[in-house]
Length: 83
Image 1 (cartoon, rainbow, N blue to C red):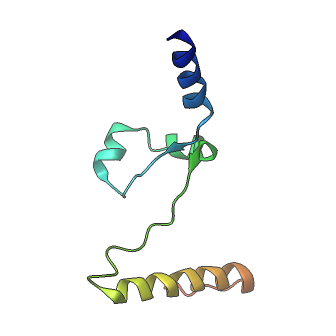
Image 2 (cartoon, rainbow, N blue to C red):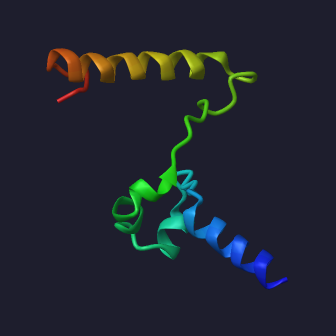
């Protein structure tokens, strides 16, 4: 039994953690807002689809456009954002 407990402890220490903030105020109240930035490299990051594309396909299109605008901003040095 001790071997299994030790193995589980090692797995928990070496396994990347999942952190899903969901832009929730509740999560920010429970955590120091700087904590996720300080521990950024310890987490796996998932690309979640915007809202529910099955219910509102335009959200998926807007997300793709936003990604492309951000890519162009980095690549060409100009911004599409309102000033």
